[in-house]
Image (cartoon, rainbow, N blue to C red; front, top):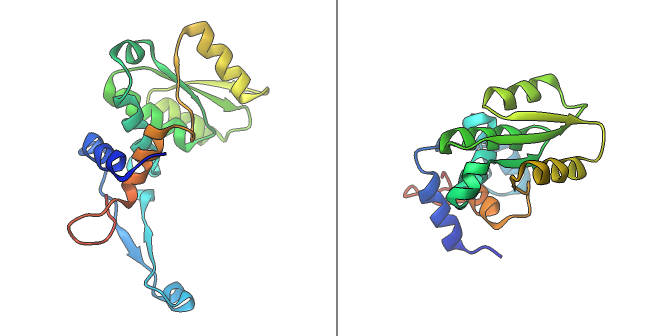
Length: 166
């Protein structure tokens, strides 16, 4: 279980490496739900999603030895790009195992950020763990990792203006 301090720490770690994305209000939907409704515009984030937030925090917490060996994950798009971006900033290599049906633009984007892409028709996790073992890489779980979750949580962290905007 992560705590607010984990998110605050992650916010400091990723500062300057991600955009402070805007909140956009929705008057129409807000009226329908009888609330003040805002959307977090992570589409304007580096790589187009919130995924670099968690990836940067996760890679920051790796040991020097782990970073030197490189990382691997499974993804069909957004995490692939986020991890590749984070790895390039922190000087490590990233391999992403993707389904062979992944759209070419997602594959090319991951490669463009520096990832090596392994396309598979088989089980993603099994392929990933096989490559991980063979190359002695650190596996970055796409969602079940406290450092990833804390990093992702930074998008809802408060700022001096009172609205979430981290």
